[in-house]
Each structure stands twice: as structure tokens, then as C-alpha cells.
Length: 170
Image 1 (cartoon, rainbow, N blue to C red):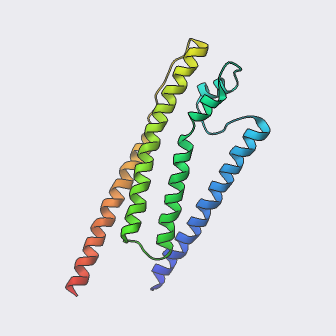
Image 2 (cartoon, rainbow, N blue to C red):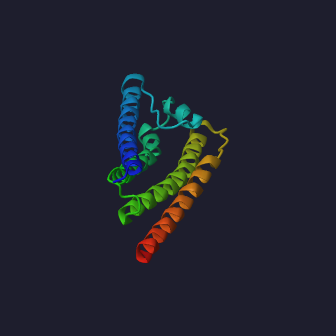
């Protein structure tokens, strides 16, 4: 293995550890906020927090609207698995592409869940507070990220094909 490849595998290992550590920290922080401060820090939605603090709202329903967080955890699993393959020097492996495609699907699912969550929370808020304006926001940055992820998959597959052709040529 050449020096550049060793650097890439080491960097991938470091990022894998960072992803796992940051995820553990975030989960611990969310748990701490919930237990100590009675705040569910999974949402930035003002309507959600207004409902959370209302005695009229059912917290079980509100918690259920935040289950897209579990999809994010599945995404973290596939991200660390992708980095594990990179750490092993498997940059063009079929399993690497599988991990990357899972990440793309999870990004799409999370974007759809965000829209559903905003709608459900807004409608629930309207039932309790009556004068509610529901705003559906689609994050432009998420759309760009998704497009870049698709472009990267395409480029990686093209690079794999070129590498295979070069091996045949030699």
C-alpha cells in the first residue's frame, strides 16, 4: 500500500471514530436535556416546543413525530460502515457503493420525514391553539447535498470502470 493510500485509510479511521464519538455525545446531550430539563432537543420547530410545553398536548404523540431521529441513527450506522471500508482501503468495492446508496436513501427519507413531521405538528398545534400557521420548509442545502451525493456515486462508479479498463489494458 502506497503512502497516499495509507494516509487515506488513517484519515478514514479518524473520521469514523469522530462520527461515533460525536453521535454518542449528541445522544447523551439529548438524554440529559430530556431527563434534567424536560426538553426534547430533537426539533428546532417552534410549534413543537410550544406543544411540548403545553399541558393540553400529548407528549407521546409529540415524541412519535420525532422518530425520524431513528432514521438518522441508521444513517450514522451506514456512514461509519462506509468509513470502515475506506479505512480498509476498499474505495471502489461493491459494499462501499451499497453503503453510499443507503446514505442517499436515508437522506431522501429524512427529507420526506421532515415534511411529514412539520405537517403533523402544525395540524396538531392547530387543534389545540386554533390560530396556527403551518410553514413547510425544504432546506435548499439538503437538496444540494443530495445532488452532490448522487454525483459522487456516479463519479466513483465511473472511476471504478476506468480502473477496471486500465487493469485489462495492462
